[in-house]
Length: 133
Image (cartoon, rainbow, N blue to C red; front, side, top):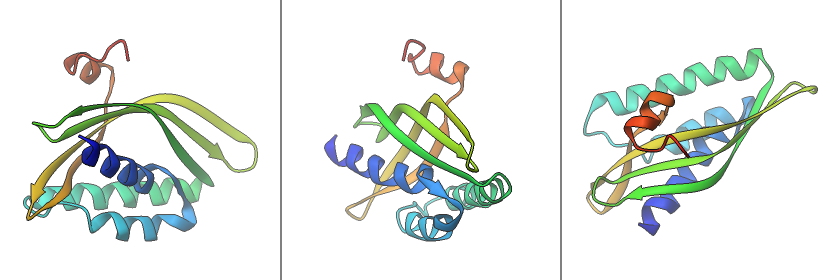
């Protein structure tokens, strides 16, 4: 359980604590921890970074995720992280919102590797039994 949570903390920082200048380095670092058992895992995370790089440049955006709670399922190798995503737009704009992310992992040759990173919407929170989170 603690290994899942520590990996989640590190990977969430690489995925969400971003500004335009750090995106390329964080993408390259993160890809070392992504499962290659399915091509979709790398493809989806690479697409995520392409999308955020464009958004962060256009809006002069930076973000930081402050985790408040982990819900860890060691059998499924899954972590749901709940916390506050703070976004800064240029010098003036600021937004904070409560968010929930699901990270799915797999164990490969003694390493915990990321399969999926997903922002959960309201319907998915209900499915996961987290509507009160």
